[in-house]
Amino acid sequence: MTRQDIEKEVRRIFLVEFEVENPEMDVNLREAYGFDSIDAIELLLEIEKFLNSELTQSEKKKAMDIRTMRQIIDYIEMLAEKRKALPEKE
Amino acid sequence: MERRVVITACSAISPIGHSKREIVESLCKGISGVKTLPEDELIGRFIHSRVYGTVNYPIAYDFKRQHRKTMGPVAYYACQVAKEVLQQAQLPESFVTGGRLGIAFGSIHGSPTVQRDIYKIIFGAKDKAAYQNIGAVDYLKSMVHTTAVNISKMFGITGRIISSGTACTTASQSIGYGYEAVKYGLQDAMLCGGADEYDTITVAVFDNLLACSTSFNDRPDQTPRPFDQARDGLVVAEGAGAVLLEDYESARKRGAPILAEVIGFACNSNGGDLILPNLEGITKTLQLGLENAKLNASDVDLISAHATATKMGDIIEAQATGSVFGLHPQVVALKSYMGHTMAACGGIETVLCLYMMQEGFIAPTLHLENVDERCSMIRHVQNLLEQKFTTVAIQNFAFGGVNTSLLIRKLT
Image (cartoon, rainbow over all chains, first blue to last red; front, side, top):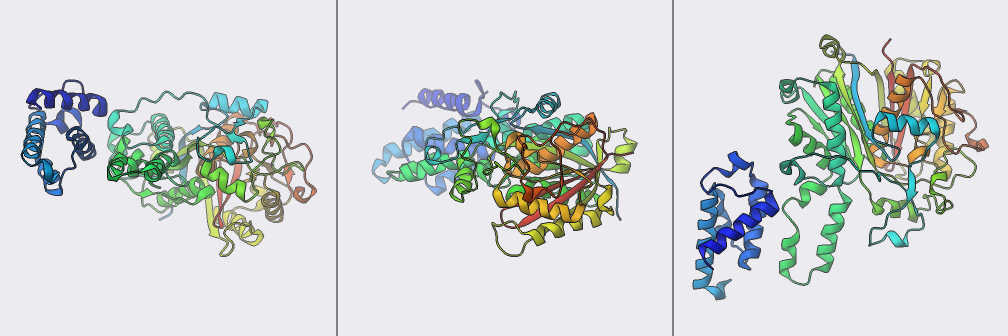
């Protein structure tokens, strides 16, 4: 899974689930698109489906500081790499 | 401190129309909103009663995604009538968000459509992954106070929230408690009402109690028949009704159009059986309503009866109404046009009374061809009356033994 794959999927999720077309990479999502706590929870569910893997409570807590598209993509990349290294744990 | 409380805006989504024009036309022409029960792909096909008061016309919602995501169908109805009420009222934005406007709004059990989807997931679950399909917003869409809080979110209203969920008295309690909140200075205005969406759970409950109409399945527009000899039960329906209540002095100062004054409210409980209508409890509510409004029975021109068209309910209501009001006030059963909109009924019936008050007519009880002699101690309206009137008592009684009486009067 490349970073491009992840970005493509995140953009798809934003379009389909949050009706946000081509969000900018470094803007504050709440301020620019009204992305709120309910959306964040929905996004975590979508990420779990995308990775085909349940997120741990500590992983979910790490997502609380995310504010931008770039941070979402970084976050998913980190999760994906972790799962690649330790597939049996998930 | 006791303040006068007035209604400055109203709106309804009902089986007989959405706009005032459509609703007034249906009332004047005797057009029923009862249709065949829509299928729900679960229990609908087993229900004996095949009739339903359906909102089967398109509504042009324009809610933003941020609001839509926490709304089930019941909240769509509620937010639409709330939006129309706020548009009519033209309250300043600073007042709407300032904390002196509150909300009293409810439904009988949130959104059954969303609950059905959750049940499908739960009972269809084959592995742990299935639970992920229960979304984070499903509770927000289906919870019992979903109407009130979605209204507060959509319009940034920050005052009190009252979310009654007392079945058929939900909206009338909302208006009554909203009235008291303004009357006693707890809020300066209250957006009040109730809503319910298409739901076969409620139909099944009444069907199993043999309380639903079943004899007119092939002629839905001939039922329900309140007070008529041929009545055979209630017809469940959907819809929403809302009013804006304001402190009279504030409304007058800002030049708001005043539709009517709320002059009294009473609510009590039967303190016993949760299903059977209770003559003593209902009679007491009607008396308390008059006392609260400081009226004599002869001051009331029109009674909007709860009158669901059940065998016993109509008789008990007629007896209670007759004993308190005698034969003076006209009595109309508005559910005859659309069925029983459950949580919304007190709100919709209030809106319809306001429309009739404005237009100077009293609609007849539809299908009331042969009055049941056990219901004959009140003055039934059987033909359209072109008649101005001033004072109305709106009666509602709920499962659980809750009774309300709301009195409104044209400002003269």
